[in-house]
Length: 334
Image (cartoon, rainbow, N blue to C red; front, side, top):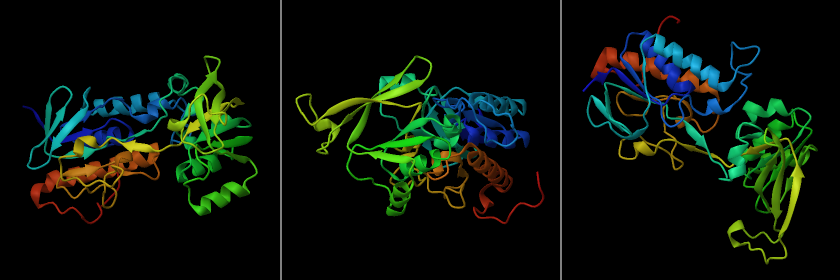
């Protein structure tokens, strides 16, 4: 069985950046592409905040360029998904949907997936007005009305960010109080562009086939959760709201289930606990990107940690088991 110098789990901005660095350094590199080759960024039609592209670039093209760059240096992109891993002894083993891959080191860059409501219409208009990233797509709704679905800190932050562009932002929350912090609640209250629709849920995304034009929602003033509602409840009100964009802000789920039987530590939400952003505490196993980042979740920050993890892999392999997980900074530049 072929043994790679490093196996990179994930092919988004973090994974492909890591692959560019390790392959360019002459390391035998395998990238497990996962269910969504290119990662979440491929769902963003226009990326205008990634350095080096003043005219913008589609997320899918950006990731395709990164993939081509990694492959040009010799990285192998494998069309498989990690199912489980064994980090008990070197070389490490990753069981995939197709085969077994082994490596002398591992970079976990499996990313995180946005949580969705599960509506058929939501899926239909994803990338056509339905988004899970205000930072990525808010710019495209200048002067428009938009909806934010959720009640957490993330939803509040999305709404506040969108006021930079949108004419009006309405938050739909299925309960009568937000779960956001008091500080964020005060900021929402003070912003005259924001309106909160309490006890309200999105039940259908409306559109013309090409873009979002509105939303069908239900309001239940008595505060019953959706699973207790029925058509005979006279308190239920169904109506349509006009909007150009709908931002789903009900959280993300890190793609780390395959780590369950390993010594890599995760928090209660499943995000990898990584010291100095990349050190998992398991020798020769490093983290990068959204799998270990519940806060920023941007392409450029993911790429940065991908670079860091790759540099640590190079150091680990050079020193093998004498490697110290917290080492002095590398000397020199690129």
